[in-house]
Amino acid sequence: MFGHSGSSRSRVALAGALSVGLAFSLTACGGDKKDDSSGSTDTATSSIDCAQFSQFGDLKGKTVSVYTGIVTPEDAPQKKSYEPFEQCTGVTVKYEGDKSFETQILVRARAGNPPDVAYVPQPGLLKQLVETGKAVEAPAEVATNVDKWFGKDWKAYGTVAGKFYAAPLGANVKSLVWYSPKEFADKGYTVPTTLDQLKELSDKIAATGSKPWCAGIGSGDATGWPVTDWVEDFMLRLSGPEAYDKWVSHEIPFNGAESTAAWNAVGDYLKNDKYVNGGLGDVKSIAGTTFQDAGLQILEGTCSLHRQASFYAANFPANTKIAEDGEIYAFYLPGKDATSKPVLGGGEFVLAFADRPEVKAFQYFLSTDTWANLKAKASSGWVSANKGLKVENLTNPIDQLSAKILQDPSAQFRFDGSDMMPAAIGSNAFWKQATAWISGQDTTTTVNNIETAWPK
Image 1 (cartoon, rainbow, N blue to C red):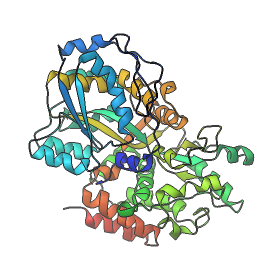
Image 2 (image 1 turned 45 degrees about the vertical axis):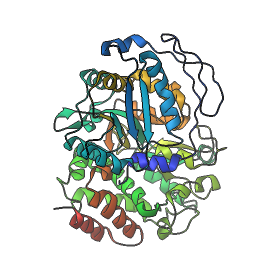
Image 3 (image 1 turned 135 degrees about the horizontal axis):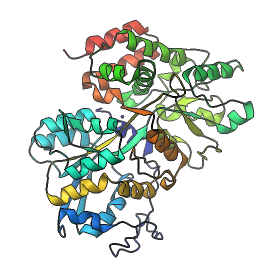
Image 4 (image 1 turned 90 degrees about the vertical axis):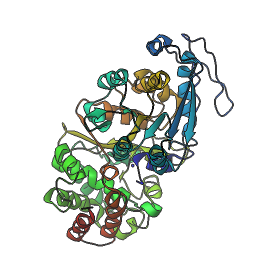
C-alpha cells in the first residue's frame, strides 16, 4: 500500500484481472449507448442528473487533466466512469496513467508543471505535495460531500495542517482472512468474531495434523511488506487506533511495549511451526514464497487460512468461484471483541493543483455517491468508503464484503502505517527487518533495528 502504496500493491495484484463493460445512459444529458474497450456494447443502466453541475457555470469546451498511477487495465473503467460528467458538462477529461506516478508527481509539482488533478495513494505523499505550495484546498462543495458521504477518519487523511485538500477516491481493505467455505462446512469450522476465536480455530485445525496458515512475503525489492501489514493489523487491534496513530508518527517508539506486543502476537502465527507454512514448508519458507502464490494453497487443501488484502482475489485462477458459497471467500480479521471493528486499508485521494470552475466540478463529481455507484458498476476489484455506495451495485462478493466492512458504523479505519512512515522506515527498514525476523531474527533485535533506523 512506497515507494510502496496500498494502491501500488493493488496494481501488482490486479493486473489483468479487472473487468470492464458498463455503458451509461444519460437520460438527463441526452446520452446513449457507448462501446466499451473490448468493442462490445452494453445496455444502458445508469442515469445522472446534470443539473448538479450548473452551480459551476458554463463549462463547455473546457479540459481537466488527470494524472495517476492507475494504469492499464484499471484505467479503462476509470475513464468510462467519467463519461456522464463529460456529456453533462461538455468538459473533456484528459487522463494520464503513469507507473512512475509516485516519484514524477513530486517532480512535476516542484517544477511548477502539475496536472489539474492527481490521485494520490498515500497521506504522506499528499502532505509532501501540499508542502510544495502548488496544491489548492478542496472546494467547499467537495468538503460538504465528504462530510456527508465519508467518515471523519477518511476526511482526516485528506487534511494537512488543519486544511482540507483531498476527498477520498477508491479504497481497499487489508483486514481480511481468506478461506474455503466448503472446507469450513465439511469440517464444522465457524468464522471467528474475536481474536481469541481466531486462535482457537487455528489450534483446532492444527490438532488435525494440518497447518492452518499459509503465507508468503516475497515481492522483489519490496519483499517483507506482507509482514508489515500483519504487524499493523495487530498493533491496531491490541493497542487501539490512538496508539496506532502515535506509533505511525513515532510519538511512541518502534521498540516500545505496544509495538513489541504486536510483533509477538504476529509471531504466534507466522513463527509457529504448528501453524505454518501449509503446503509450502516450514516458517523460513515464508520468506521464499511470493505473496501472490501463498494463498493458492487453500485451493490445494494444504492450508486453511491466508491473511491478505481484498485485492488478493485477483491471484486466484479465473474460473475460481469467490463467494460465500464458493471455493474461496474471506472474512474480516476480527478485533479483540466482537464489537470493535478496527480496519486496516489503503486508498487514493483527489488532490487539485488548480481552482478553475471545471476542475472544481470534476472534484465535486468524484466526491458524490453518484460517481461511486457509477464506478462500482463499471468495474470489478474496486470499492469505496463512500457511505452512499450501494453494495448491490458492486459486481463481486469480495467488493461487497469490503464495502460492508468500510460502511460499518463501528469501523475504525486506519491507513496502512508503513505508507505514512518516513521512506527510510516504511519502504526500507520495516520491510528488511521483517524479512530477517521471519528468517530467524528475534523480536527484540528486530524492533531495536527499526527504531535505530528512524530518521533523527
